[in-house]
Every structure is written in structure tokens, then in C-alpha cells.
Image (cartoon, rainbow, N blue to C red):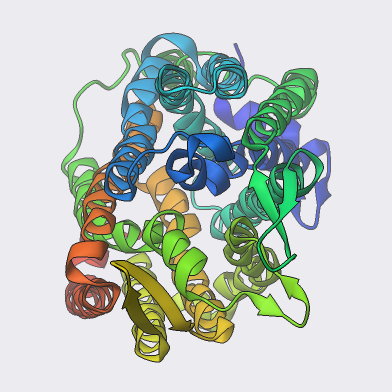
Length: 477
């Protein structure tokens, strides 16, 4: 078996695209289709759960649906620590990605075929399990395409992240057309205005299943050509190979002091980032419901489908990711440490929620026969600016975080520690689900302002301790 250095040397001989190995773009498109699948399902999940049976929904209360959404999106990011460990110890990353992809494909098919509470439970469970195998391992493969200390790694993850969000951009558009147009049943209301009587949500889940299948076909067809041996064997085998190549007798099993400190930084950053994602993931729960009820979505004679707003954030990502990829490699960007980048990301998220707070001040309602009637809705621009700030914050945190974990983690624990990083999103989504469930009780203004001020405070604290964290990273930026 070739050493990691030899494999990377062979990959470098294949040439580059925009300065990066061709294998990066294989992972880009694989992840793009997986995210198309996930975000297509996510765009309609809350609406599918809360709409009436006669509208082809499951008629679950908004509070319960918010908790289901939170636990689902949370466990989607809990299982990667298990999938990462299994890949490191037994499977290898590539086999784990295939297992995960097939399992998620079956999960989307279950949501398509079984339009019931049982079908929802089976589908979400399969998606949780599948994502555990898929998510940490494809991110780890990106890092393994580069030599230790390669300055291109941060920009590589920004490019990879653009693939994630290209899928997330396209999915809600496709799903909205399927659910609200092609497979929707339409009628007219009392005023003779066209309205949707029932939605084609099941076909949105079918589109998500097809997207997942396309990604797996691409990956399994081209991985051998562009990744060579990377990810074929468990990390333990790779470590042994590196040891023999270095003329050492035994594989290191005890972590050095430097490795332990670097791992500690992963755990510390993970603890901070929980609160970023708890706020950010309101986009799929409380902000989706708020947009549906209180944001003026009409432009001229066109009313924008609520699902389409799930494409705003990924659209900004696709536009801005190349800018950030360039900036992180610039003289100014290369001087910024990871903790500083992440602290700025949290502050920017908080600023975004201030605009949502401003939106709540513009809404006017009245109670008619015990039912809320919206007299005036908030302007669309509040929502767009909120997504803009959230996107910049995300670009300071998520691709940078994926990159730094591959730099800080010992090779033999790389996928498992990527799972630990994703554990922040597990806790965050459950926390976010509880937050969203309290919107009706506490009011949107209280929720949005509380989240905004709290994450800004945490961002300032992270900025204050950034120098200490950088010292513990021992030269890793």
C-alpha cells in the first residue's frame, strides 16, 4: 500500500483545476447532490408536517413540529461521530460514504411512498443513520487531498462549501415547483382568486431521493480515478503505512502533549459554535413559519413560495464563497486566526437577528373571532438582509471549521473528530427546536432579540480568548 505522501504526489501529477486537485471537484459534486437531497427535503419538512391532511400534510401542531424538526436535524449531526469512528477503525471513508448515501436514498423514498406519521418516522430515522456515515467522511477526504501545512486547504473548503450550497440553492427551487405547481391541486377562493387546495410534497421527497442517487453514481464511478487510494482503508491502516514509510517500528498510539492541546481547541470551538448553529438553524423552523405568516412575499402580481426562501442563503454562499476563498489566501486573510474568523461569524449572525427584530416591529395584527388576522406584514428586505448577514457569518465559521479540524486532528482520529465538530450542530438543532417551539408563547421579537444579543456576546468573548486558543493550536491557523 502506498504512503499518503506518495498518493498525494500521484494526485498532483493529474494536474489541477483553479489551482486545486481534480479530486476536490469530484467531492464537490458528490456533496452538491447530497445537499440537494437534504435541503430539498428540509425546505418542505415543516410545511409538510404542519399543513392539514386535506392539503396533503400531516396536521402536526407547530410546537410539536418544531421539536420534531429540531431533534431530527440535531441527530443528523450526532450520528457523524459514530459514522466517523466506524470509518476510522473499520470501513474507510469511501465505503462509509457509499453506505450513507444508499441509506439516505432509502429514507427519502420512505417519505415519498409512506405519507403518514409512520412514514415520517421511518424516513427521518434512515436519513439520520445515513448522514452519520456520509457527512464526516466526505469532509475528511477533502483535507486528505493536501499535504500537511498546505496553505490551499482553507480555500479548498470554501470551494467545497460552495458545492454544498449550490445543491442547497437548487433544491428548494425544484421542490417548490413540484409541490406548488406541477403536482399541486388548485382551486379558487371566495373572491375568485386561485389558491392551492393540496400540495405535492411527496414528489418533493422523490426529487430528493433522485438527487441522492445521482451523487452516489458520480462518486462511485470516479473515486478510483481521482482519489486513487485515499479513503479506501481505515485510518489505522493509513497510520501504519505512514509509520513504515518513516522507518519507524511501531505505530504511535499515545497522543503527544501538542496533539492533546490541539484536540482541546476542537472541543472548545465546538462548544462556542453550538450557539451559532442554534440561531442559524432557525431558518428552517421559526423563520420559515414567520416568513409564511408575517413577511410580505408579494412582488407585483407574484407571490413568492415560502420554500423558495430556503434558497436565499445558499445563493449568497455561491456568490460569496469564491470571494472568501480568495480572501483567506490574501495577505490580510492569512493573518487572521481561526478563532478570530469564528468570533466575527458569531457577531455577524447576531446582527442579522437585529434585522428580524426590526421586522417584528412593522407587523400589525388583530384578533377576529379568536383568530389572528394580519393587517400589515413586514417588508421582504428585512428577511433578505438577515440572510445576507447570516451567510457571511456562516462563511467565517463552517468551511473554516471543517478545514481546521482536518489540520488539528491526529490522522488516526480525523473522521471521529470531524464527527465531534458536527456534534455542535446536534446540540444546536435540538436547542434550536426548543427555541422555535417557544416563539408562539414568548413572541418572535423576544426570541429574535435574545438570540441576536447572546451570540454577539459570545462572539466578543471568543475574540478575547482567541490569542490563547491560537497558542494551543501550535502554529495551525
